[in-house]
Amino acid sequence: MISELQGQNYINLETYEKNGQPIRTPVAFVQDNGVIYVRTDKNSGKVKRLRNNPHVRIVPCDIRARPKG
Image: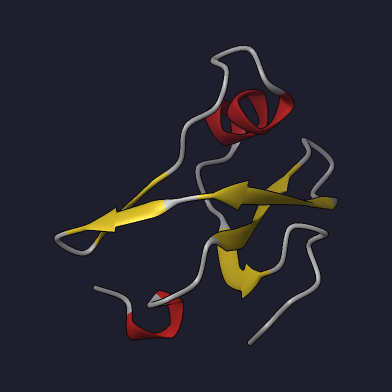
């Protein structure tokens, strides 16, 4: 379990466009045995960006993507 995320409902998922520009998206998540799971449509922009570049950054946030940590 990632302790910084304990008790949080959303993470700010930062993925990257092909040109390297970061895109931040608030997403609901769950943790199980140290793995973070996010559910989204397979054709969503964040999934397309992840296919091009699997590196991400995350931070706890509220539903409006305002960081909490």
